[in-house]
Length: 191
Image (cartoon, rainbow, N blue to C red):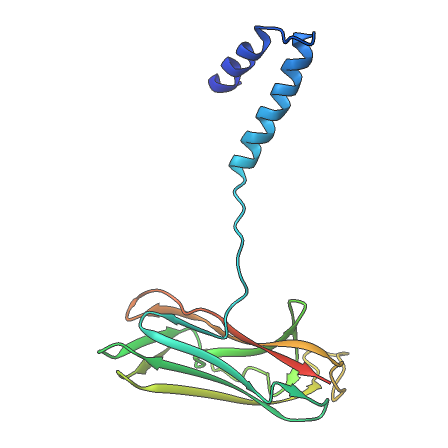
């Protein structure tokens, strides 16, 4: 038993309360003390969902979906913009040829919409962005499912629902030092 715990238990067992049993008081105090220590040890981190725009490392990052509400076979564009607001160029290193990976999600699961497939070459790539330059990546998509695996539905309209368009950066270095960029997302409604 750790020293702090033993001394706390000894102090609690030492006296009686006005209502009666010291043992009952000790058990309640022990339970309360244990609960307080457990809560203190298990700090909860509350996080917010990723924003539709963000700034990091002197870069402004934004994601748009146009239109933000579409019919099941209507095309839409997901567009990512990255603007270098620094006075010097920035170098972003990724483990593949894509600057960011697009995706459509519902309830935390990636949904394979046509046009959301990743066509990145597996090669370490450095993306250089000059001062004041804006880099844009656009993906034309349709809310129609494609088969990622054998047996998956192919060419079937996506269910009518709210979805999240998301751009995930897999940057592992910013200017030669370990770093990344935040995920950005927007809501898409399929009617």
